[in-house]
Image 1 (cartoon, rainbow, N blue to C red):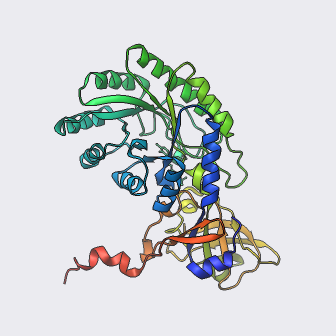
Image 2: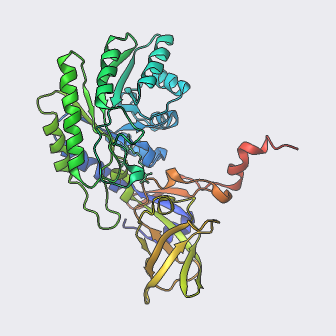
Image 3: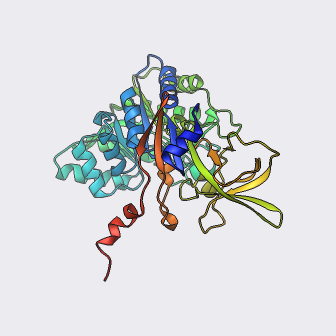
Length: 403
Ligand code: LLP
């Protein structure tokens, strides 16, 4: 991100998220071009970064949306995503969410169990509608990623096995209130190996062939998200190799390929800015205490995730330091043993690769206001979400305060 950090934090304060919109556009175009002339739809996984301006930016480029709650569906619609480019996934959809999704007439609901299919059927029947559906298949493939973000094994809660999926498609085909049009799989996140995706695509493509043979007209082949990015020294999957693997799997079938990247599009578009409050040493161990904390950016605490931390413009001998926030938990850190030069009050630290699962996983723990978010577009910066205030935080309690 080529920008003047100082002006940015002086203008908008810290802690702060900033996203490079040109980078997001480049990523979108690179992936889209890798699909070449084939029918494809990139459904941005809204959970990665749900800021309305981010979603709108992608919608303008032609992206659809992959949503996991009715709230995310509303965000996609509010941001201007075409309703026929929105899919609604998730293992536990409430009745009211299903009803709303049907009322909003989005492209399809992605079903994750037989029980859920029966609920969708009953709700669609009550509304005298036909629900367009896809089924999330769990291909039982090890994606070789962090266990918390691995989703394609039978031991995970996601999707149904191939045999169950087949049974569900046959049932749905006969139901006047269900219209099976898609198939879906998503085996995990931050994937850096193509093999497991390729294998899954082949298994699921074979399922589609067997469905076509019995006249079940599957038209959408959704390969999920999961494309890994560089946080440190990872080698990401090549876009072209990715799409070619999918083309090969579905050879001979006329399908629209859908994919649901989140992290790929936004992770390295974003950085998190925080200010140094103090330095201190405990028995020789060096701590840099900053004004951002785990409530703002949870990934290091939750997954022990690595985010590169940099002190722009600072010079001097680098020594290892734990970069920690003010929250009352030992797990409140952004990095351990990070090599940093001597720092002073008000110096800025940049925590890189924070555009995905950063702000969306932020909370108000310790009654801390969630950070502001800024877009960088060309040479300009625009506030796209103002910093929360104390008043924002107590708004929902104040009028219910027990006297
Ligand atoms: N589609 C489905 C059905 C998903 O469950 C996910 C992510 C995606 C797409 C997007 O995956 P991506 O392309 O971003 O890898 N909070 C964790 C990541 C959780 C991912 C959950 N599902 C993290 O901070 O690493």
